Length: 193
Ligand SMILES: [Fe+2]
Ligand SMILES: [Fe+2]
Image 1 (cartoon, rainbow, N blue to C red):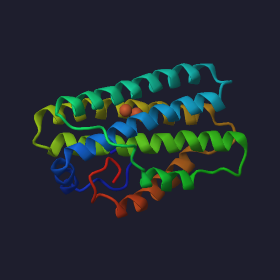
Image 2 (tube, helix red, strand yellow):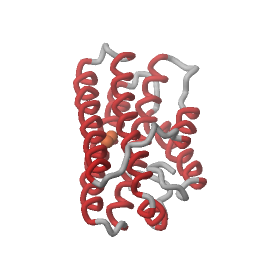
Image 3 (spheres, protein in one colour):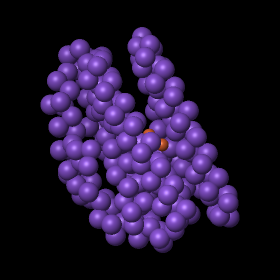
Image 4 (tube, rainbow, N blue to C red):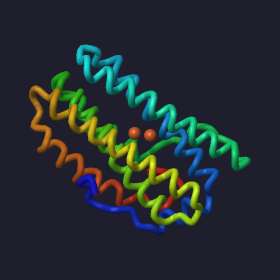
């Protein structure tokens, strides 16, 4: 799926469903961070007109996702907890190239974002196919489609705006890295846990 090397064990969805308040809190913050990431990318790459438009759309959409998750939390009588640390994303961030050209750093940041969208999409699919809660199963199916579109947008921009990076080669490196990284996750009630 989306080139991912390892699919999530469906038992992770059981762990998530046993603590919905926690998974929803973690999820809400994932959406907020995705919006923040899009806004930050606008600030650093303002010379690309079409990119600015698309990132604005993504930032808005991610905040809509945030709001939808918070509404579910409130309706169910849960509380949105404090922001959760995302160790998986922290590890991916370390894999980003920061010492090359400006274009290389930009392309890698796009691939970093595409990678998170791909895994989030896969985790949403795992939830939608395995949890018994019908409202959430439908909700996660809809979000899976949305994050798949974001994945495509980031990957397409990497290909389009690269001037000195072999994007297909670098994307394979990302998929290999992530395939090994994700092996140590899948046991916590967190979207990337
Ligand atoms: Fe989202
Ligand atoms: Fe997204």
